[in-house]
Length: 495
Ligand code: NAD
Image (cartoon, rainbow, N blue to C red; front, side):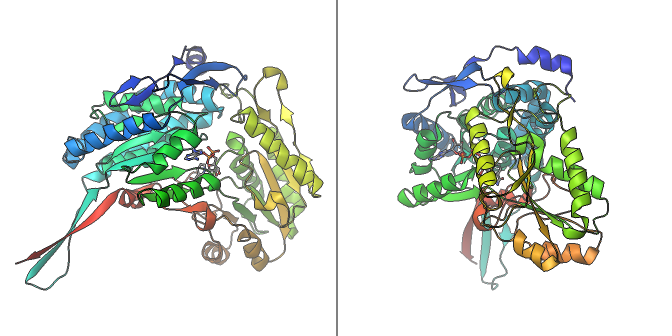
């Protein structure tokens, strides 16, 4: 784990003006324009990123295509790719302190969480796909004897990666690592408010021996660079994590351009369901509080709807409130804090808008609801709980992506299932019960990509993550994610 001393040294590091990373080097944006990088810790600018445009995306895609055609990566042996990616993972680990602090200065996630979830998780993901790629075989089809049907697995070509600001390294690695392992060349469009770690990641990849042009990073505004990547005629696939509205745009871009495949990991409104026979209510309350309030609720799988069975409602709410009050909110670079800053002043305003609407619609504020630590200049919000939330309220239906929990009561298992499945989303969920049969019935009944039982979060790289309904399609993580980046080709050979 990183030490407070190391953090204090790194928090003062000059970052300066960042370029784009194209063809293995940092270059200026075509327009020469830049965007300031403001830290949510204190509201002050501490760096700038290049404000890329469609011409820059075009340069990056050309470089990626050239590298792909050249074949020094795409046609290299899986053993070679494994070697380079293993070195890449080692370098990410070696630079974990630097990457973690850089990322926290950019997006405000508490360092304890960011350290594990960002560089360490990214390194683990890169290593996982490095290890996997020389174990992927083609197939021989069960044909008649006079033919040979071979199924080859080939890289797609140029893959665009677009990620959000909450965990850019972790989520970026979930897409970049399998895409690279499979032999693709990649153009990354980082989130405009948290681009710095992905730029550094590309430099480390180059240092590890990744050939020029295989991994490019173009920073800039989503509506400009993201759109240009989505519309580009020479991009074969887009792997996206972010909001539903942008996901819809990417599908449109694909339809309007070259029908590139699009993989979408979108938002959620995940139900966390506590049955009266939960094995340990206190533990369930602590994990539930962490499951919504860590990283200020800016977690796609956050348990933002809490459903509690009536028989234990008062006891559970009491434990939940105590667990919530114990969470220390403050400077995300102080290891003593449990919850850091909201990623930006705009996001904080949006969260407060949800609080105002929930109050207007008749939900009861149990705790929080306001901005905190205003004197720092940063964006901090108190963990917020509303009860008496009903299905028709905005808080029960729309994703806040902030530290705001809506609580509902239920009586029966059927009612819990109905409430759980009553949003347009289906990303994550949890069930707390000591009854094995209830647990298994709920796993089947809940429409979500992930159902936790007697825990929340923490699922590692070995299992897939993704949603159903309007939480998207396609899966990150696990060996299943590799398939997204591999094309099947049939060879039908007469013997
Ligand atoms: P966002 O959709 O606003 O932005 C995501 C990315 O898309 C950014 O890089 C942004 O620059 C880019 N973008 C914006 N406009 C674009 C356009 N017109 N064309 C192409 N790209 C464009 O989302 P956000 O605010 O960064 O992140 C929060 C959202 O991400 C939430 O909905 C959250 O649930 C979701 N999320 C999902 C997962 C998951 O695994 N399912 C994980 C983390 C976050």
